[in-house]
Length: 333
Image (cartoon, rainbow, N blue to C red; front, side, top):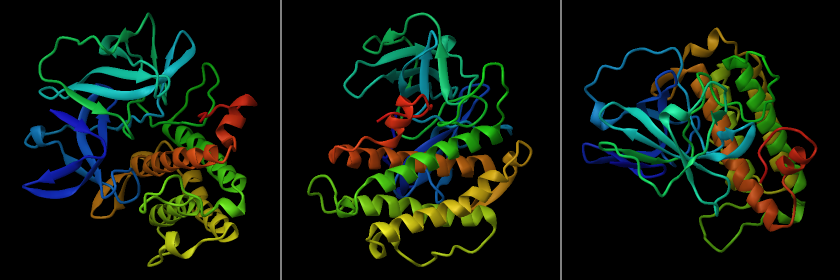
């Protein structure tokens, strides 16, 4: 049984969307549910579905749900060796069996067994010893291979992709979310500023459905208006509008982006370790506040990766790379 991110999910013969991610019990590294959305991305309109093989299994309540994405770092001997690419799980027990990573898309993959993994730090999988070539198969019963495009593994807290962490410091869910948000906001805002006005209509290739650079930024602004307004308990100021079609100029797009961040600023600032596990309404479902906020970060960082490719196509160094060169922690593209 293979679960591939972005693939169609069907229930009783009907397509219910695309696979956007997985919910994992961080303490036991055990899969709970599928996360489905219309476009296969984590965002404000995702839905949680029971994994078909375990639909009739009573799932115990857990305090935290961890998400693993390909932004999750794999660290060995205090050096980053790559990022998560795939998970293998035993569908009978729902246990994660191994994690596969690689440094670059052209690099050979390497695999770590379950007993070699230390996932106690948010946003990282640490290991000692030497990773195994992913060409070698580990003996196991039926295994599910999950090509990780936006799922998570991580610690008992959610991914903090942009935040630094002092040695010995205890970082809770709220701080992890706030640091991740600060890093994403900084990178995405700078990316929008770096692209010249004349290239806001640029898109790589000739595929008709591909977004222009302006539409990439508009897409995040629209998603944040909806998601963060919902979490703030306020009306969505862009309800009924299609920003990707309406906003074209750099001034229009960057203003909408800044306005959407202004709403999200308050939502992330108000999260605490205590209220992070409260249930909030999300479409027809209820999810934890932390899961909803993490969805904003995952979707945002996915689209930042897209924006970085557009910048590189114009020989512009993405802000995350510049920040990394100045000693600021963050993803380099």
